[in-house]
Length: 364
Image (tube, rainbow, N blue to C red; front, side, top):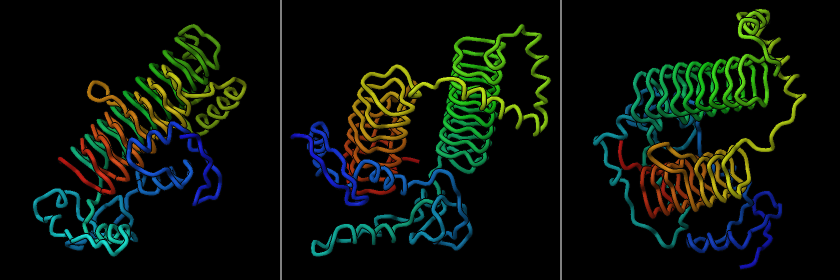
């Protein structure tokens, strides 16, 4: 079909449905969307909480528990461990479908009666949130993290605090977009580096302070090279063991960064792709947070798991997870080998051929 201009039923703005989009919708056996890409994204985001925990009452026993579901939500909540147990049977909530009643009214009624698990967690040791965590506190949407706290969107992290979007990182603090690095502090989008302070977009660097756009450099302060012994003497002058010294150094670094150009996208090794934070991908359009993706559009936070899974492919409007997903449409929080899934939330792993399903789990 030819490209078509449609009006969003939500925000009333016009948006384009391209010929390639019609081909995907035909493959998925779904009609073209009536919401624009941004409104569809906001709708998906509204179903996911990855930054807050609430105190709620367990529906079964009335005990106060922590939950990712707010107390005002009109649903039943079971403690995570009991939800996974054989102490209750979800099949007891089954009901006949009434063809004279609207589908979504019946689906909403089912959702409000079948209990939800209090948290999306698995394999925790002395931790409160996430998956495969050990001795962690408030680490959300993260896996294989140890001895860390206040982490979001991280994998393979140790002894670190206050990180967002980090992978293979150790002993780091207050940084964003850090990969394969050691001792990185107050820095942004740095890879394969160590001992960085207040640096941005540095790769393969070590012992750098207040730097930006450097590659394979060491002992630099505000992009100026120093001898090793002189570097450490200069660093002492910043008085980094005090709040005042840290604040002043950060302001100086920000002013220095503003003097330098920024790359239009954070990402590399991509082919025919557009968006932000895209890596090792091909034909990924209007997406962000993609690693190892192929033939994706309007997707967010779809990753690969090194050594186990590729990213996602041949999907539209898929938010969060990936790990070998394929043919996903309007899906949130689903991954690890899922295929041919539409209009679903929190269904994993390796589920196939699902529509309008919520919180389906195959294993603990």
